[in-house]
Image (tube, rainbow, N blue to C red; front, side, top):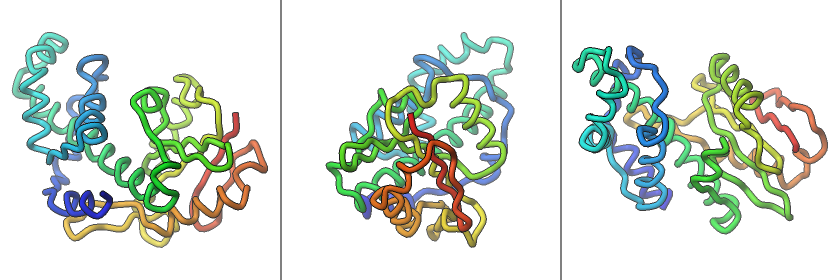
Length: 226
């Protein structure tokens, strides 16, 4: 599965200019939440769509509802902003799914799980080892992302699920243990070395020893135990 998925990621045409467009930043909640549709397509149906195909599918289902929800925006401006918003959301889901499949390849499929319920609780996937549940949180390693990660943890019950919550951010810069590996088309993916580092931290019991955040000098794995 992981090899086929990496081949799919290699086939994607990235749009770095589109990623910079942030003219539409309103929350897409409930029915309009694109993460629910992406979850069903990618995780349940194994139906992998590229960016344009997903945007067309989303618009075909929800354009009228989006227009009603945001009536003050010019339709053209709304659609262009929505396309950029969905692009960024899908990129995040694609990276999360690759990390999930990579973890399954290392820990074993039977030990790595995800669900819509976990996702709604802020957990991207869970690794089970010796009766302990390690809840993994995926996000980019930037000051902005850390700010929102801590905000969600404090105010949105981001760690309401019992277990050990592990922040596993990915770095865009080279030279760190959590640096992404870039495929030929420029899409960044988690490296086996970073996931094996996580495996070592779990198997050694390091993530069970403290209740405060821990920082590795080469990269980052923060932990919070509840």
